[in-house]
Length: 167
Picture (cartoon, rainbow, N blue to C red):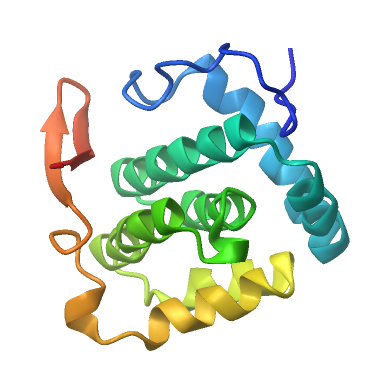
């Protein structure tokens, strides 16, 4: 089955805390990779079609990709997470989407990548308005972009490194 950003089913209920990776990740990854291939036009269509459920799934996927980037030391997962979070609500500066941004930035730092590199790559893929909000994030004061400020910590689960929400 393929992930549909307009879906309203509870098929992804409980998705966020599942082990990483998971078969559901593959479904969302195929969708996000389609957005990456389709560029700003595909992202705009996805934003227009996105249900609240679809946005929440993309937010959870984004968190999972930040974790996976650290585990696998691969910035491709950060770019996927950034594209997902734009469709997941960053396009409107949604509070929940903003809360997840430090994970993507932190994961880049943890694997030795300058955060602006995956952010710029994602910005070219998503177009405006996502591009604007990605740039605005990096323009915030560093003390307003930390894991702790946004309610997260770097932790571990049985499979290794994992970002965990504290509130």
